[in-house]
Each structure stands twice: as C-alpha cells, then as structure tokens.
Length: 557
Image (cartoon, rainbow, N blue to C red; front, side):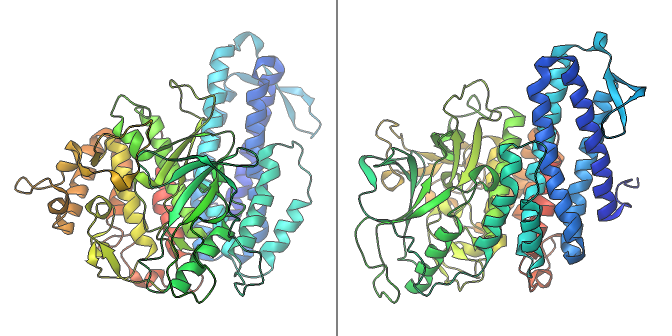
C-alpha cells in the first residue's frame, strides 16, 4: 500500500499539517462555544497546536539548510502527525455542521455545533484523546526537532532570534518556553571554553541541610534539601578512580554540569544541574594528579514533582504495583528512550543505563489510581559518563548486576572495544525488556524504606525472572549468572521475541530487538559502522530517533 503522505515532500507535509491542524482547532473552538465545560480542554488543544506551529514554521525556514538525514527524519515524524490530525478531525467532524452563510474573522466558513447531539461526557473523552495524541506525538517529534540545533552556521541562530520576537495569539507555558528552551540548548551545544576564565561549576560547602540527606532505595543517588530554601535536590555521586586520565574526567564532568545548567526535565528527561558538590575538599583544579573523591552532581528536582522512586523500586513492586497497565508502561518506555536521545544530543554517552539510574518523579498531588500526566522519567547515575568524542579507557569490572545491562563487548575487567552511543542503546533495550515484562531481572536483600539503605551495603541476586536468562545447567549465583555474555544476550533476545511479543505486541518487541542487536553486523538499521562516521556527529542519534523513538511513539494502546 502506497503511503499517501510520503509523496508530499517536507514542505508539502508541513502545508498539509497546517491545514488539518487549523481545522482541528476550529472544530474544538466550536465545541467550547456549545459547552462551556469543554473550554479548558479546548485551550489545551490550541496550546499544543500553537507549539507545533512554531516548530513547523522553523523547519520551513530552515529547510534549505537541512541534510537528507534531517529531512528524512522530520518527514517521518510529520507523517505521524498527519495521521493523528486526520484521525482527530474524522472523530470530531461527525458532530458538527458547517454553515454556508456565516464566515468567521479569517474569511473561512464558521463551524456550528449541533447542540442537540452534543454529549458532554462523550465529547470530553474525544478531546482528551486528541490532547493525548498530540502530546504523545510531541514527545516523538521533539528529539528530531532539537537535533537540528547541531547544524553549524549562523542560520539556526538567526531564525531562532527572529521567531523569539514573534507574538503568539495564546501565551502559555508551552508556547513561551519552546524557543527559549531551544536557544539554551543551542548555546549549550557550542564548544565550551574550559580555560579557567568561566564561572566555576563547583558549589560552595554548606549549601545543603545535612540532616536532610538520605539514600534513595534501589538507586545510587541520594536525596537532600537546600539549606536556604528547602528545595529538593538529587546528589548523583561521581568517581574518577576508574578513569585513566583524571584531567579528561574532570573536564567531562565540568562540561556536563555546564550543559545541563538550564535543561528542562519535562522535555529532555534530564534534571537541571545546579553544579558539582565537593564534600571532602579534595583538589579539583586542572592538572591534579590525585583522583578527587566525594564529588556529586547536584540536580534540582522540579517543585511540582517532589516524590522520587527508582525504576528498580517500581519493578520490584510486582505486577500489582503502579504501571501495571499497558498504556502506563508505554508512556514510561517513551520517556526513557527520549531521555537517552537527549544525553546523546548533548554529546555525551551515559555508560550506566539500568533501572537503578532511572528515576520516576511524581507530583505531590499524585493518586495511586492514576499515573497519567502525574509522572515524569529522568536519567541519573552519570558516574562514568564521557564526552561522546572523548578518549575512552577499557577498564571494566565483574559486577554482574551491572554487566547484565552492558553489551557483551563491554563486560568484564578487560573490555574488547571502545564505548559508543550504540552501547547505550543496547542498555536501553534491556531496560525496555524489563518494562515490557514488568518484572525485575535483579532482586535485593530486604531494603528498609525507612532507613533508605544504600546499594553499597545491599546484596544482589537474580530474580525468578532473571533466572530464566541462565541455562538450566548454570548456577543462579551472581558471577556464574553471566559467565557467558553472548549466551545471556541470546536469552534476552529469546524473551523479546517470545514472552515480550505476546504481552506487549509485535511493534514493541521489534523496538527492543533493534536495540539489543544494534551492534550486530546483520542489523538492518545499525549494523553498518561506516554509515555512522559522519562529520556532523548526528547519524547515530538520527537513526536512534527514527528506529527507536519514533517507532515506539507510533504504537497505539
């Protein structure tokens, strides 16, 4: 079957999206006129569309500067938008009739709602579905939109400045933030002058309420409050001991803190970094010969989402816990893959993606019966992160509970290859497998939530689900569990193609399989090493967005 949208081209797709989006907003306004209780939902639809309009206009202006990579990935995302707009218009238009005699202010035919047919509860559900579809699409589209910020040259900055001066018909948080957020990302991606003249990212001691510091269960991070305003922060520990070049490690740490200084956690899945805390006073100046200890990134927790829980904690709650619904699992998976795409967009590799380093932030007014819109997923655990283009060392460890999330090339004390973005993608695949199965591969000794015991004093073992990865003849003890990394990978793939496919569907299973095989030579999407040696450094990120972020976002529940 031929895709009717595929022949439009990028500009034609944008024009069609404008037409259907404008018609959708007109339909929604008509419902608000007929039923005042729908006003809030209609405003949300209009706000979503205005943000999309801003982004579409930016793409239109920048289209001559886009490479074929960029055009292709934008085209695919916009084709998904057209499908969603068309579906929304079809659902809503059956309840309205267009007048032949009442032109509106823009010269178009006014839309009149057949009030007798309007049922509030029914229309509220339809509008809620429309809002959800647009917001889910926004999550699919944003990574490809922000990927354009890596384009060299002044045109991007000029267009961002021009659009920042334009006034929008509706001023909402979303429409106000989209251009400034993009400008901040653009500045963050520019080369950092690390000659010592910039303001230090190291924080002064005494900024935290020491009595408030506590470990977070099933996670390496700690939670604390600032001494001045009581604001909640996450302390993410950093070690340089495993880094062969201490100066290189400190440079990466400083640059990462600077780049995340103005990040938006709800857009990027990365917390705003307030700086680096040095708790033991070790020397962190350039050319230091002694690895500093006691360093932590200090991340600001949004005041609206003041409850934090690790994904491992959530997985260990069992099938009766939160995220037991398919829609909630898909939402969590989408947020995770988006967050990883932004780590790579900031030109870093994470190197430590696993359920312990994935936090779920919850609103203070959260109710156990409804997770939708009340939670956001963020990445932490940046202990071993590295600049994507920086020199990597091949020092590893035998921590089986970490190796489970590492590609076979990156397991053990002697590593076979340098770390790349695709190794992060493999780790994402293992996490997506656990989310889809909604079970933990790892179990812990009992953790007392009141004492918030740290991981350093906790014993690990494979869970009943994790034991399925081992052959029947293997011991289920930690080191023996992963004595053959390639066999473990094969078992993960078997779960993805079997149990996962039956519980989450073919499309989700395929995304997980794509991640787990992203370094295999026969992988159709990621297998060709030569394809990713591009000068701009965005080919892997673009492929990840196309084959993981977008494919996951296309799934409807």
